[in-house]
Length: 127
Image (cartoon, rainbow, N blue to C red):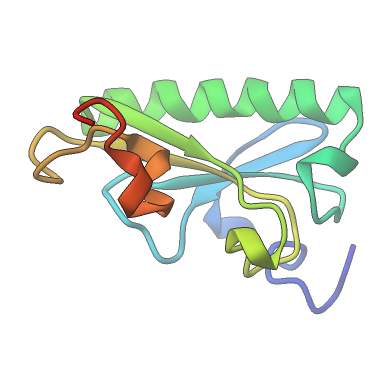
């Protein structure tokens, strides 16, 4: 546990689900309705620092989050993302997996998905 980490000191009323190694909660700054985060209970910065057991636990909770968000929000799709390091946009140095529900019409052209972190390279199909 890291006392300066906002995820290590997450209030219990924000937790929507958990297992022995991971927690699931709503993103504090959601980009869409149902935007959720899944984190390991152990303070690690990167997915690449997790154990095999933690990865199984994280993915099991991601499945539960997806099922619950699907039932409550009825999105048309999902983006799943992990930012590793400042160069990749990570602002909280505690691993967190984003589950971002997507809705038809939420973007004019959603093709390219996560590739749009480099907008000029997202459209590979029309060139």
